[in-house]
Length: 193
Image (cartoon, rainbow, N blue to C red; front, side, top):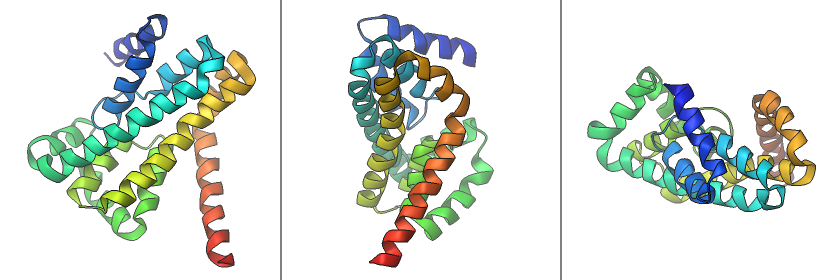
């Protein structure tokens, strides 16, 4: 079933509705849908490398707005909808751990989930349920989701279609390296200022 969903997502790259599909996919993935928008972002960007940054912007905007929708689900509808989504992904036992991460790391938890392959939707719903400061949530989401999608879009814009294999193979490693560099950068700023 997941493979069929994956193929269905990819088919949108071959239509004139690719940009809209990317926005909708990014929106839905941030709150409930299982297929990450990177799949369609890469397909669209490789088809027209000159539009890669535009596609990254569309993907970022859809993802952040979808994250806000996930926040609302957790804030207002946790018992009726939010718990079902988290249970669907088999992560209900991690729910308390996510709350602990929010209490300890606040924006860092959102930022890391927004950039890495960690299920961002679980963090968006949990952020609303735990009533995390909405401004902090949005700012961390904008930074992390944009960094993720512009990294992919930027690499395709610069290197063209030949970079796809590299991104597919090393995305998780690239995400972890970026998080380490991001944390190190914040530590340097904190020490210096």
